[in-house]
Length: 133
Image 1 (spheres, rainbow, N blue to C red):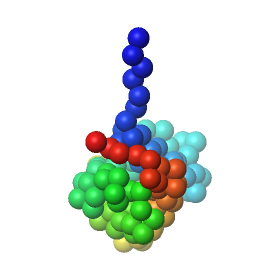
Image 2: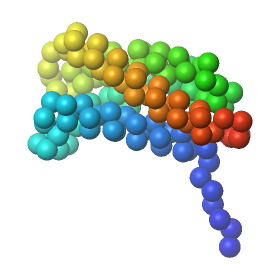
Image 3: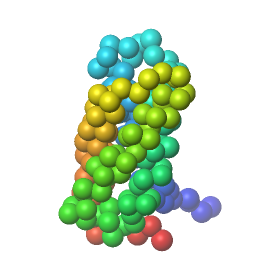
């Protein structure tokens, strides 16, 4: 019997999704709406994941030579700077609601912090040991 090992790239993408999910949960919790949010949380998570999925590969965030270098940890923050306004726009369309500039600013800053912390952990755990090929 052959064992199937999960690839580092799959783990990295899964970690990104977990970090974005935790970010969304914390956002709703900070507004004291976590208990009643239900599927409404998807109106933040799905657009943010879509924005991240567009920005992250473009910035090389799935290449080991970048993800394993601490000096490259500015890239997740930049990805969020690109992803968050798109996510806010998509969320506004989904909810048929206005897009508040303060929401974009908070979404950008807090998602950038979340994703940079997650990617710093990934960098620390995988440095000099992972190849995605």
